[in-house]
Image (cartoon, rainbow, N blue to C red):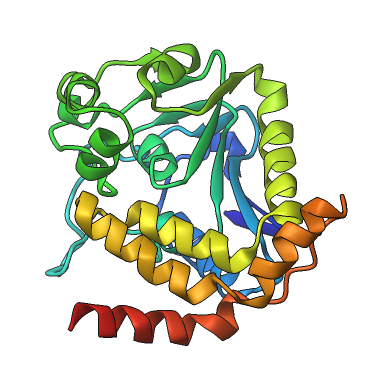
Length: 271
């Protein structure tokens, strides 16, 4: 139900139930989480694209048994509204959502956990859970107001209304709007540009700072800490030299090797 293809530093994750418009199931949640974990742990993966097979990104929760769609699993005491673990924001590489078609409910809230969103012009988008007797999931009450504004989040979450890919860009929910057939290509091209030109450790640290959710002073402190972990290192020398010599950079620092030092520095910074 979830496919993972890795080539030339780019991972493409595909939600693969095209006959059901990629309606989301518990099995898909586990598969997407496993794919994210594999991408995070593979230093050869430099950027990730998430898309849907066929003409939809994800049409929302599987409602093949409508009355039971939002039932708690029997005996489930530790229910989580965020069933995909790790989340896209925990992957230490940029994750781009290629929203090639409809993204409804959890389909859109999954995309909102990604770093960039490219959307089809005529895609149907909504977080309609308040019209189904529940509410938005996957941390959307944090991601949406932080991506856009409280006003936009209230409009989308408290009405459950449907909107297009064009309006998604106007609202700040998506980064780019394109014809449906161009969405995946554009996302992969952007992923390739990142993979070829951006330093992996710098990317991982920048993403971590973006998603940390700190206030201004806390963010400045985190940036300073991360600068101390990168300045004067091989990649900080290689980047300017590659630019000066008009060649592709040859990055040396690998995220997996460097991360223990990052975590240790963060713990010291908290003391």
